[in-house]
Amino acid sequence: MDAEHKHDLRNLIACPRCDLLHHVTPQDSGKIARCTRCHVTLITTRQDAIPRITALSLTVLILMTAAIFFPFLKLKTGGLSNSASLFDAATAFQSGILIPLSGAVAALIVILPSLRVLAILYALVPLQFGRPPFRHAAFAFRLADRLKPWAMAEIFIIGVAVALVKVTGLAEVTPGPAFWAFSALVIVIVLKDTAMCKWSIWTALR
Image (cartoon, rainbow, N blue to C red; front, top):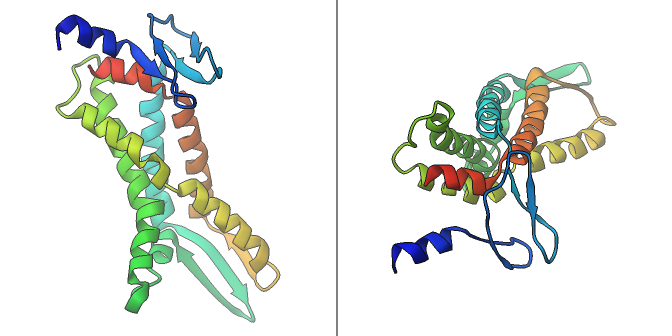
C-alpha cells in the first residue's frame, strides 16, 4: 500500500451508527461534523479539549481515592450502627463461590474506571505540554476506549440510589463523604467523555 493511499484511509471516518464512510476535511475549532445520513455527531473540535480532559481525568482519580477509603454509608437501626466504605463493599464476599463476585465488583466500580483514566492521562499528558506522545500512547488510548463499556461507576451509583429507597424504610441511612465523592465522580466522568473527541485525539497521536 503506497503512502498516498494510506493518507487517504486516514482521512476516512465511519459513522458509529450507520457505518457510512465520510472523507474528513480540516475542521475549525468549535465546529461540529455530523453524518450526512443519520446526522449523528462525528467530530467535535474544541481548542481547549486536551487541557480540559486532562484536568477532569485527574479530578476523577482524586475523587476515586476519596470514594474508596472514606465511609460510604452509615446505617443505624435498633440502637446499632455500622458504616462501610466502597472498599468494604468490594471485598464483602471473601469466601467460597462468592469470591469471583467480589472480584467483579471491585473491577467494575474501582479498577477498570481507574485504569481507563490512567490510560487517558498516559496518552494525553505529553500533548498537554506540547511534546510528542509517549511510546504506545495510541495503544493506551485504544485500551481506554475499549474499557468504557466495562467501567460501570455510573451503574453502581444508580444501584445504590435504588437500594437506598428500599432500605430507608427499615433503617436510618446516612450518606458518608465517599457517597458524595462517588456521585461527583460520576458527573465528572460524564463531563470528561462529553469533552472528548476521539478523532481529534487520534489525529494528535499520529
